[in-house]
Amino acid sequence: MTESASPHISTPRITVLAVQPGDPPFRIVEIDREVASAATSVTDVLVAAASAGITVHDLDDPDVIRWVGGDKFTWRPRHKGRW
Image (spheres, rainbow, N blue to C red):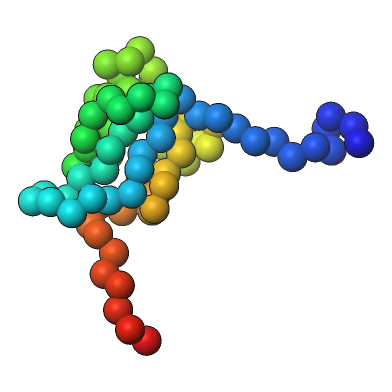
């Protein structure tokens, strides 16, 4: 298999974890695999990144940021219901 045929697996410096219950709900932001801050909005994520010297140009770039348990629009806990 050639290098170009192998899958690309990125390891972004920023990881935003799933929404945690609270008032208000929040998401933990990890930078370089260490907890950097709690975020209640995308702005908080960008502030944490800037504090670490990281400029984010595209919040959807998987090489820059990884969203766990939702995307940049997910800031409330998901309710688990019966179907």
